[in-house]
Length: 47
Image (cartoon, rainbow, N blue to C red; front, top):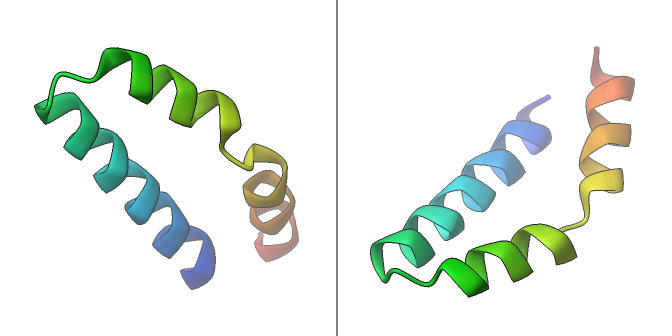
């Protein structure tokens, strides 16, 4: 679970950083390209 939370925190910080720079396009791009599958799988196995 720690790995999942770590990734989530990094992800959140990255989006926050882009938002502060007002980089809406980059936020959208980053979210589209993020490896959601890996996080979902990790989350499932950790429960």
